[in-house]
Length: 305
Ligand SMILES: [Fe+2]
Image (tube, rainbow, N blue to C red; front, top):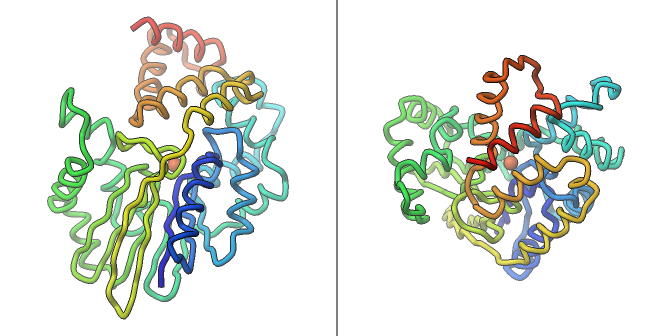
């Protein structure tokens, strides 16, 4: 049995199509989509409809799908101001049928008995990945040198091996394959008969490389093999489509940051959010979420750095 594991598409339809085209020529039996289907590029409905209707597929929800559920319960009249204009644009852009699909997605799934899928690695191994694997931390470790794939896996394994929570959870887990996304870093590791696989972010990788990552998992007569792939596609077209979209017109700051992060293939947004918080505190602005004015002023100041 061969599985294509695809996570964190983030609305990047060209990346999803490139991955599916590659997978279609790789004798895949089942497709597993691991959450975060929209947010970042203006092709949300195309991505959601492709995944919704994809044959032999399973899908779980991610944190972006949680946001759709959260927003659906909120008063829309409060959506006129503040930093979340991009999120509101996405909510309004996604059709009600697609929103319903996202809200009904399960948080986790067990497939073919031994395959466990959830967007968050914390479902299986505690918070170790999100707390300790960020690309900023990886970058700090390597200074001016861009970490290679080998560097990243070396650091991840050092962290896992020395993390008490991870080791406790590892000893408690049943044998099987545990699949998750969320960190946007592609990696995998075998511990005895337990396999941990993050296929990376198909549409928005921040593990210092471009392309569209996904992972092929093969289980044949109890033998598990993992093939990490990275498919090249037209990333410039995605950026240009975003720049020419009504989404960009609606919220320039957020999308400029997204474009910078997408091009850098490493964290930018997190640094900006820390800067905005400092900026707001300096001007004694206590309003959260940030007003459009504070959000835009902070971005101007950040660009001067
Ligand atoms: Fe994500």
